[in-house]
Each structure stands twice: as C-alpha cells, then as structure tokens.
Image 1 (cartoon, helix red, strand yellow):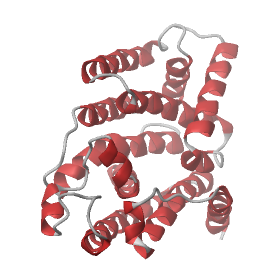
Image 2 (cartoon, one colour):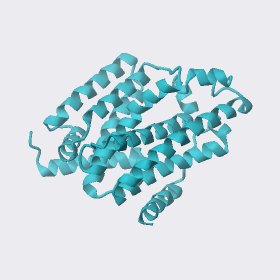
Image 3 (cartoon, helix red, strand yellow):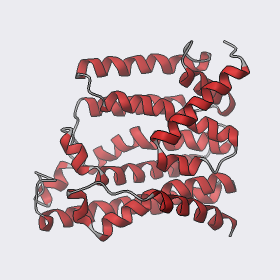
Image 4 (tube, one colour):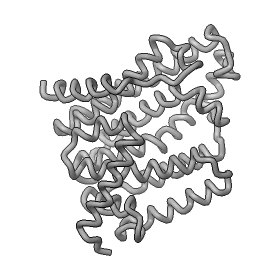
Length: 288
C-alpha cells in the first residue's frame, strides 16, 4: 500500500506530539537526532505507548487481553503499509521501510504487557530480567536499528542496547514501587523480598526497606555500567541521544541511592531544567 507523502508527514507529526506529551524523559533524548530518525523513534514510541495504555487502563482483564490481540493484528499490518486510517501504524510502516525495524521486538513488548495484565509476579531476578528484556530491552533494539540506519547485525551492540533497556526498566520498577502496589503489581523478585523481610513492601518501615532498595539499585547501576558501552559504537548524535535518555534515568537512580526510603512515600523525578541540562551535557560529552 502506497501512502501519500502528506499523510505520512501528518502521521509522524501526530506520533511526535504523543511522544512530547507522554514521554518527557524519552523526548529529551530523541530531539537530539536528525528529523528522519526522530520521526522513526516517535512512531515506535507512539505504538509502544498505545500498548502500555491498554495494560494500564481501567478495562477488565478480558477486554485488555482482547485489546492486546488487536495490537498484534495492527503490528502485522506494518510491513504492508499499516492499518488504514491509523496514523501510528502508518508512521511505523514508513519507519520500518526506511530502517528495517525489528518488529518482533514490538511483539515482545505486547507479550510483556500481557504479563502485567495477568498480574504476573517474579520469583527470581532472572525471571524479572526476562520481563525487562521484553518491555524495555525490545525498545533498545528498535532504537539501535534507527541509530544504525537499519537492522543491527552486530550481536554485541544488540546486547548492549538490550542491557540499557533492562537498566532503565529496573530503575522504573524501583521508582514506581508505591504506584505499582496500588495497581496490585509486584515486580521485585519474591526471593529478594523474603531475604530482606519486605514481603509487604511498600508498607514496611524504612529500616526494613532501605537494605533491599540499596541492593536492587546496585543491580540497576551494574546494568547501566555495562550497557553504556554502546555509546562507543554509535555516531555522535545517536550517542548524545543515548547519553541524554540514560542520564535522566541515572539521575533518578542516584536520587534513589541517596535517599532509598523516599520511594516508599513518593515518586522520584527530575525537574525539567535538570533534564534539559542532562541533554546539553550529553552533547558536550560526545563532542569532547
């Protein structure tokens, strides 16, 4: 299916608007990219956002599962030009044609959100990592294809992109402990909760929670330290994008490490000025 250029441009504009409004952390990074790559990243994010909204919405379980099945059907139309009348899949189809996006990564994302819908919990850290690879490592692989101008062939680079996705998702999990608990979701490994006597997290004392939080934050930092090796194999603007996105998440992680008990009472975030500063510093670091 051939889509007129003006319709593709309209579709990208809508995806970029979604990204700007719904993913401030992500957008601070991708705005450092040239327009074609920025458009492709926005299309991938808009599709992922739609999947996440189904998982986090107010519908019943059966309706959510049906919605995720519909997203799988929509994804299947992308190689053919997208779903008629749907700007998000129209933009994603154009990006796929240009960058050979690994669409199976978006399929993995849908599978990961289905685990959320089913309120899946994780006994071990390895099980949690498998989930993180599905919902965030998959996004890292999509980003890498866009950065490289086509599907990545370097297995090491793919692994590093996947590792960064896991690192950011682990940070999200720590940041959102209270919010997820309110939804009936528990992501931290059950074996860790038992080990630290925190089975009722976040409804435990600071004294109980702090050792667990410090332990999990150290794990996230290890994944960042390993995954940031990706920067060395990217062009300068893509490297700046990665440093900006990961820098914001590492800033959140640093706040958690400084005051671990804070996540029991509120959600930690960075102010807009600091996010902008992280993005500017990322450009300077790559130039240096």
